[in-house]
Length: 285
Ligand code: ARG
Image (cartoon, rainbow, N blue to C red; front, top):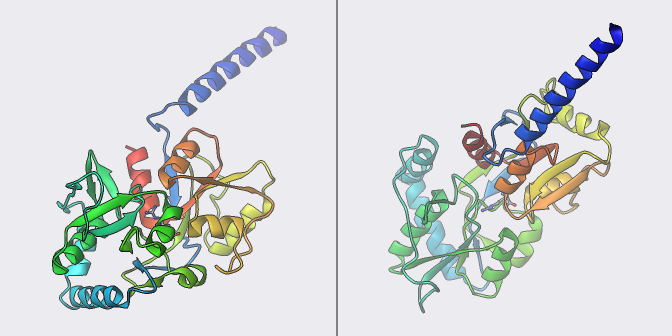
């Protein structure tokens, strides 16, 4: 009798595991994620990257941003992307930039700063880019590329400006200038919904202590070349030792890291706060 029960239990268990696996492979991202949004792991300022030789552009951009801060239009522009009332969209007029275009280098998988709605680009940075282009009397051209290609593009004048929710860091300041800061942000942790590993965490120290307890099979997903990667893997110039006991995995976009989290391939994602919340909202739909 006992044995039969045990067999029945084993069957139920493997069925349950089978359905778990099926659920984990669901490409639509069912199952969801949970963002620890109130625990800000870093303190960061976003600014636009400009070639060190192009002081005139840095000055113009700072003037335009100062005006937008003074008249409140920057704040309402930013807010419109948080409350869903933004209407601005953009599509390049040509397949490559024309001479004299205002070329914005970005990585457009970072909502609400830059992302696609169908074929149209939108987001805080893209809309500010169009305002700057207008004021300069130029046509906007958005060059979407890998995040770690943006600074090289600005340095080689293949782009006029990097607008990509980019954090000002000492290392980047060696390669490019930054216009004035326009947004404050932070890295945050995301786990799969129902994962209780970090459930008792209230502070940064709590999160870091729990990560420090994990083993090498614990994988943190981040976007390549970003401050999230630097925080997780360690970067002396950015001021973080990183977590040497776990693996940090770099993805081409934060959204791909989140997708792997939903699919159970990694244990956590460390990504900028607003993009984490936006991507999570889409995955949790
Ligand atoms: N703020 C982070 C950094 O500067 C991430 C930026 C990612 N931006 C993007 N458009 N994908 O490293």
